[in-house]
Length: 168
Image: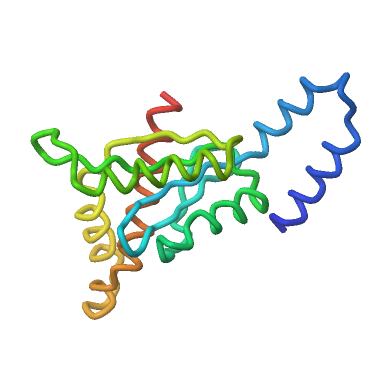
């Protein structure tokens, strides 16, 4: 159903001429979504917002080496406007060692997809909160250790934090 909405949206955009650029920009923003990323050396969690940009949903955990291609494809399918990437800070506000890799990734992302805006937000405690969410949801002990679940829930928490700040 989402793909159908995107196809209809693309058809509407194609029919608009340059005189209606303001309408095109408005339509683009109304139907766009945001992505949240919990970046990791090997695997990264991904989440997505609804088109109203109010709710965050865990999407999946993928290998970080495939993250750029994944974002490119989902940005086409879901009309992604903003990618929110967690900023790994320690309790004393020092930046985590992983930040260097994240900055490299962001440079690549901006070169690869220059029309997508990248935002950052503090990601402290997202993994701990994710683990607690999993425990509270009644998932069995064996599945609670599944890092893939933790990563995508952490990505959803990162995006949710951004949405809350943005919609204040």
